[in-house]
Length: 187
Image (cartoon, rainbow, N blue to C red; front, side, top):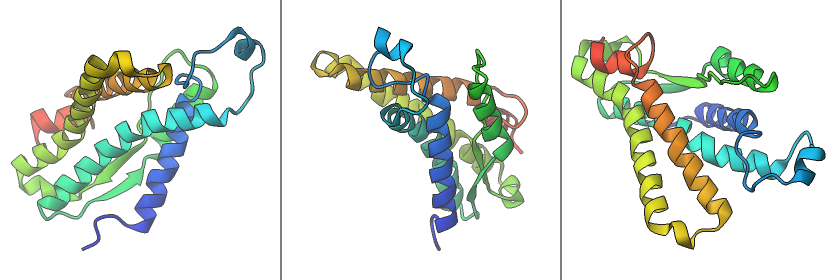
């Protein structure tokens, strides 16, 4: 059994880069100077890279947690891009919307998981739990190593902490297709 296919790797990479583009103007490695504000460049590769390494793990590890828990129960599971959700996030970012709504992807586990309500709920909870663990790791690192970190490293961990907490809270809302609805309401 193949845990992850080449096509899924490509889809995860595309998702990661688009997330980097979406968050590029919001997450930056270093504070903006007056010069940066007056001389805006359309593409700053260091900001793209930084935004990608902050945002992508929160989303990608969330989705992979769903996938691997489903596989551990014997279900087939595959990651797919939700093009409408990812595109909406990109459009909102490009028009400088004051809020972002991003639904970059999902794991298709098929209908077989619905026959096992406990497995279905655990698969749904695996993603948000991953975000909660990442939040906890970032919180611990900030708490214990803050004085030893560079500004860039501290910024990374603060943003990692915040994005993972937001993803946990948002995904646990018991509404519609969100993970919270699956956890609390079952199949």
